Length: 132
Image (cartoon, rainbow, N blue to C red; front, side, top):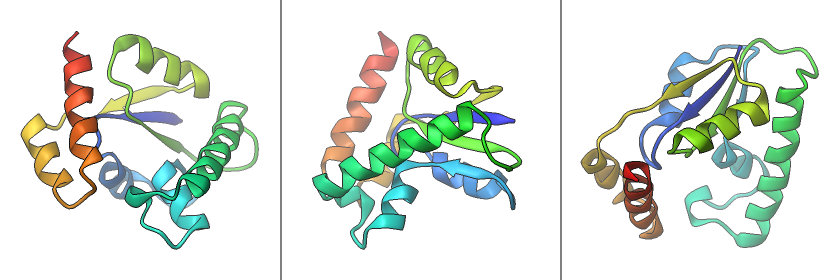
């Protein structure tokens, strides 16, 4: 199965995956990719390394969509917040199911306090766009 795990920044998508994925599963999360190729905190991204992380993510998404290699399930992290974006992301990876991490705005903002200020802005934008 291929799962699209979506929600606001700081909603707990990575934690959900960590608690549900098992040996043999693929996890496509740009933060984890960033950690694999850099010593910097992914939340304080070096723009040059971030660009490479996004290129690697695109390659991994192709592997997942085309079901290349041997693996069990795949979990793909997304911050899609509208029906159209969720459908686009699901089609991009030929997902079998989507999992929405429905975390309240206040909780996401509290979690973002330990991250760069841009995350608070991203969360506000995510919730504003979701309401439209």
